[in-house]
Image 1: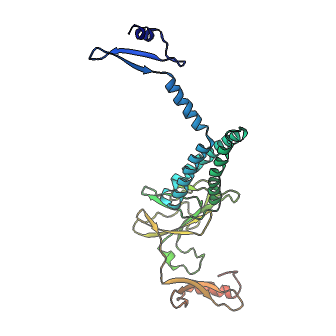
Image 2: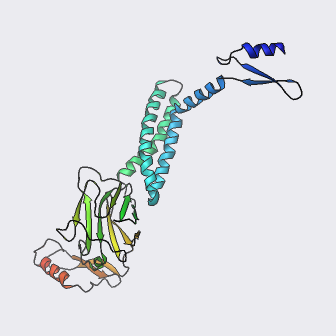
Length: 303
């Protein structure tokens, strides 16, 4: 007992020396509880060694890349994936440095090879993103004016908003019913993957077209009408949405109306609206007939 008391008083904790705390219990016996300062130091050493493990760092990065890829498949969660991509790039660079260090050492080369194999799927994900044509996510926030957010790894190249009159479009580039349009202006750079803007105020880097020409701002949107949103991604085909009262849903084309070719002598077929079943052209209004006549007379290069 005297020896334990002496150790408790004079044995300094730390540096591998253990200190004993001697306390009497309720039965009067002496209880010895060991507390070592080395335990916290050992935990820090183990944590540091794990962070320096190239294979472990590459494994964590692969899991983050898989999570980002899955979020891109579901457009609603694509914002999470866009936030994870810069993190995976940073971790990939750190993993590359650790791999070089492990390759330099003799006992860790096998671990470095395994880390390289784990990094390959992450690099493949970046290559897929370079040509990604997945769906975009469009959401509206009911404010004054209406606020829109478009996001997705395919990029946002432009937006067109059409009124109900657009249902009477007679050719593929017919802009009847066009209310507002903007498109990416820098052809040397890939368009942004996320834009957040208010109606009538295009995001930075985009040029707008206001209808009617010469007006300073587009006409206000009527919440009682249904508008068609044509979103042009940076990669892939245009996507169509319907806007009604601040709610956006994916637009479904009329199953009875399709596009087909109309034979024009000595010219390429004119693409007009046709019946999806009979494939016969539908009745054309006067403005469509005037354009078709101009096309036949070679006054315009395409219908």
